[in-house]
Length: 421
Image 1 (spheres, rainbow, N blue to C red):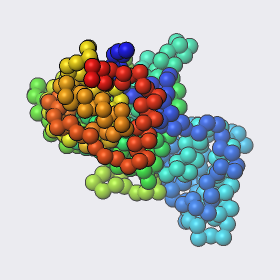
Image 2: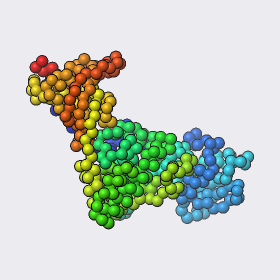
Image 3: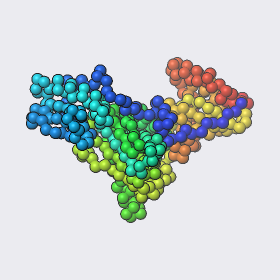
Image 4: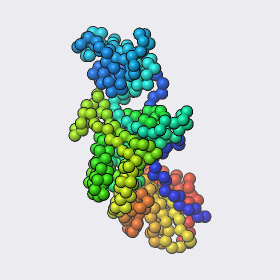
């Protein structure tokens, strides 16, 4: 019985319509914060709270200098008694500072202002903010808002993934390499709502994701400079040097997705006040903007990265998970689940008759194999060419048991492994 090998998975980052739990960042907490979930006022720095309020548009409207300040939500002043007003101490040195902070946090939790929730989230999970926006025509009666939100979420996730990939290694085209670890690094990221598909904010926890935010900051500015150079001179050389800053095909494709269908789009990075400014970065980074006129340069750069990324010589250890050949003898196609030697989950390779027999027998007895070859960029670094030196590898009992269980669950895939032997 022969089954065709399954095709490569789509490398596009999943959209909001069909989320995969292991791949998507978390969702911004919905609704007003509950009293039991408020940050501990004893652990809140008044300076951090003030910085977050100012960042989210709250207005400082007086107070006793050196003792406390009064803040009101964004927008025009409300009638007396009609708006939230926060009293925030300037320091924790006064006896009533903790009480004032507790009252301010409770007032934020009860506030109807959307920014109040954002401030509480940032206090609870100290993180760098990445903000996207798109200039799009006003939809008729909200008819286009769902599509716009889908597009915004998809592009934002692709941009985050490009930053996480650049942390793992610099390359013009990553393909399937480093993808699992990059996705794991995005696990703690929180993504807020995208009303009308016009703007979106992600909170990247400092503890686990600051390297992603910093790399993304450098990569976005390098991409902007490379596009400007290409549009001014026609040359693509700046995109070659931009790879070291983190620019890649993954990033150019993500920027294309963000800008396409809009009149312009931008990204801004804002550092967590509690963690300070990263080395080599400005205190208040300038936003980076792209327009539809930048799309040809971004498309050319993406094609260039895909074409020029070289193959990689590797020695891979992997478990055989699929075997296929057209007859009982001759060469065949093998799929390996990579255990070591390359930052990809699976590879396909063509083996001659003897190597194919070794791979089939190794699987049947619960052993992985080691093989040498060149990992080709075509197809996303999922294909190994020039395979040689195929040998079984000894593993511990626990790993062998797991591999044997895999065989039992997929035995029909391997019936041809011993065909003709």
